[in-house]
Length: 514
Image 1 (cartoon, one colour):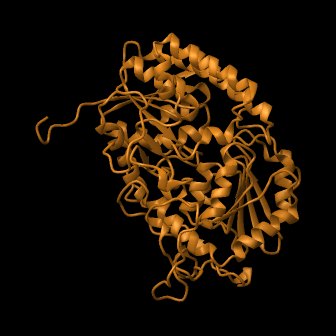
Image 2: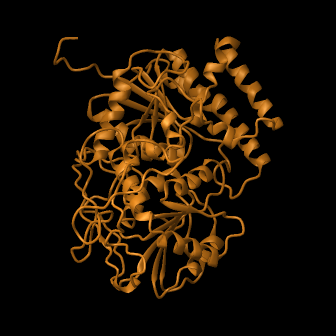
Image 3: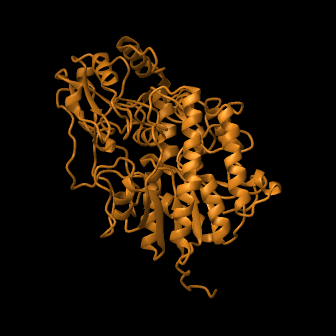
């Protein structure tokens, strides 16, 4: 192709798990692809059609049989296996035929799928002669680290039934036993990971098949209605169990009791289908919302209590907010443990949780002198993942103090501690400021702490591509921040590759892939 000739427009298809946390990280990529003249089609549960169509993409809908998978609190091993089996059956019997019918006369050039839609995505890409790309909204897997082994008991009888479904499905579409191991692998030749390598479990073991592009959520537009913190000097705690938390009234009331009203103001987001009235009367220092975009609160928050969903964690770490994680199951517990390994949070079991135990975890995290430097390193990793581009400036503390993460007292930052063992690799693993930032000084009376002021985000929004109202993890659009570079990196990752092939064998860290 002659130099300067525009690349031909491509058609991208996305087959994703029926969960907002899996769909949201791709929305910024979709907007950028559409801006560049490409076409994007989602095969998506009907509940998410409006979110997808708001970007300008086409939504081909079906009704998911997801059930309580990822929604139920503290599921048993039997429940996990049964729910996973039903999800597999739904993927091959509903999602796959829906996709094939939609693309019969309009074949995509690239098929993007995730961990839960592996079977449908890979077989569809093969039959449609499209490039398969696996997207990872949470931790990726490779030869050294297996998400599947962490989540499922391989000896559970339901797993054998699931294997039969996979073998039958692949055989039906011409994939023989000699190829099934490749098509059943946990990773593909091309994998987009929506977190920085520094937070990936065993991140140093991942080669160039994996592009760690970081999160692509959106900061609130400058002209949007914004949450404002109390002006009385109290600390702010944000509490959430994610967008689909369900009825957890007891948990939220317990959290309200964990924070002393004299020193804390508590903001709770209960879940999109939850009614704050179900909590009953709340103390005056607590405000509850069915939902509120977390980027409106996190610049002011001293701590974030959450379920350890990756979208929530990436938002918190983007703003340098420490996390107390209360995972309920699945890979959430792995992410909570990774918070501790990286020195940016504490993990607490949900079972048997008491208000005093939560209060103790929060106090211990905030008193740890190593937390601010670890947060500064991870914040930098989150903001610079996926390529160049300047991140937006950190929020300035009220009263003109140093930004969160800068060395206190002015002057150059002191030498930082090395990367903690088990915390992923990348440039952010090096040193950082050792002194706590001005806006968070352990031992300083809460009433005199300066809190960050939220600056208007440096974001240029293209007409017709504004952020989805009410969401918390929408992609930045054409920002001058690092997130815009991540979105462009994602486009380059998908757009440059033209080889259509099945998942393959391991490649070296130095081999060219993207």
